[in-house]
Length: 185
Ligand SMILES: [Zn+2]
Image (cartoon, rainbow, N blue to C red; front, side):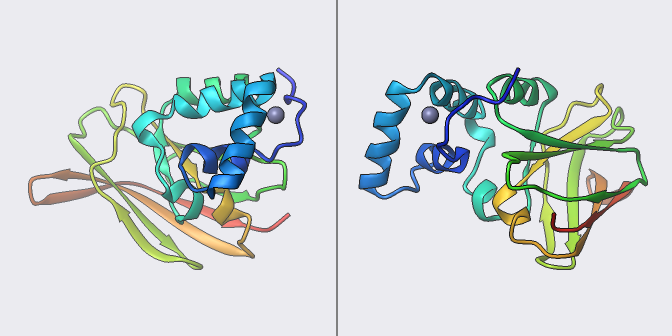
């Protein structure tokens, strides 16, 4: 599907849905969405994120974990999605452009015997983060994570290392490491 033709920044729709716009801008977006088929479709895809989306998507250095069907839906709705696919232990030279609405990373890993999965981030720009007990599909063997586009667009050259850790009681086992070498575009 081609990109929906509307000049409204998709970011406005995200912020509208997250309730982050002031009353006046919020009303303006709302009126526009009623009249614009492209934005109605984009907003519907965002609403589908449900509980998965959080304000960190706009501000945070991470990210949330999502599913392949969701990403398909986002693309069908006309959002522009940049995708990176990494094997366990892999690294990638990545970027973000003005036109990207979402940046998705598929982290390949053996997850079948994992009960609890934690994600550790070490980012030369924003420091260390840890997300505990993230949702994942053991059979898919892939963790799909969406990184804050707003954050990525502020980045200069930066390196982010991501580590997947299986947690079982007090035991922790490293599953795989990934490296993102980011350059601005
Ligand atoms: Zn529109």
